[in-house]
Image 1 (cartoon, rainbow, N blue to C red):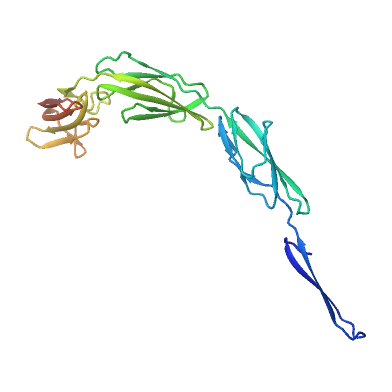
Image 2 (image 1 turned 90 degrees about the horizontal axis):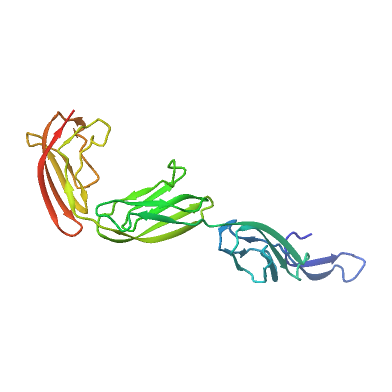
Length: 296
């Protein structure tokens, strides 16, 4: 008995010394056809409208009949089918081959097509108010659980129910230049299906910078770190010295301030001098010098 399909030569030899022509041999060629096995590959999930691709991996098979589970069929070998309506669909493939012993074989699988969420948001103030952050309100459909904000100026924010207490909380963003920005909200549901809404948001920024004259390090409040604060800043160099002319702090990042420490040691209560060089989005520059009181 042959276990594999293929072409085989069968030989029969008769050994009988009573005959003059002994032994005698007869050869016959036989062909064993394979069993047709229907099988295919396709992702188990998708987002409507979902373009499902089916890769036919059947063994043997001369013709194929596909039933996509939505009252449509195909005879293509590797079909592509669009599911416009969310739901659970059972796909059936029948592989036919008249040269095989079993003639036909059938296999089925299911795919789950999920709906996409609906992204939506409002923003204020509109019209814009100079040097005022824009507030974004998330109005996406309830099935969305993860969100990505793209503010149109290179900044973005990801909010997720597993990361934040409320991923739908109001988001505020301060634009760093006057202009119109294409802000987008990408809403994603638990199945990974996403929808994007973009709107033009206008901002008015007036170049401005200032430094507080005192701060209270290690208090754990908004005054525990001293920053150079302003609007429209694109470049900055902020340096602080103690009364002996020793540099205790320097930064070129407007988001980094001095916490009152030098080499990890909190500095004594005193008056410290600073210099500040700033360049704004419109190309203008500003230089400021002054004193900061460290209060403990």
